[in-house]
Structure formats: C-alpha cells, structure tokens
Image 1 (cartoon, rainbow, N blue to C red):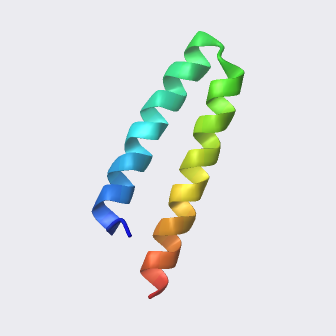
Image 2: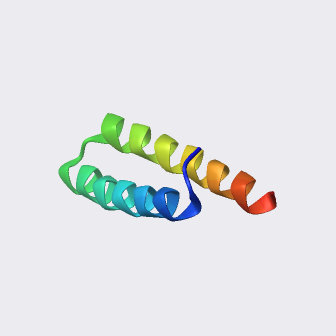
Length: 50
C-alpha cells in the first residue's frame, strides 16, 4: 500500500495535469483525472483513519 506522502504527491501531480486538460479543453481527460484525484483522496482518508 502507498504511504501518505506518495499519495499526496500523486494528488498534486494530478491536479497540475487537470489544470492543463481544462486549459486545453480536453474534457474527457479532465474527468478521468478528477476521478483519479478522488480515488487518491479516498485512499488518503482511509490511511488517516487507521
């Protein structure tokens, strides 16, 4: 399982990518990126609860 720091780093990268997709008008990629961000935030929340 990923540690907290690597999940946070991945979320930051995905948020950067998301801004790029939005700026370029790539809605499909933006939605997929948002889904990955949410999945990682859920993982992070689960880690913090244990």
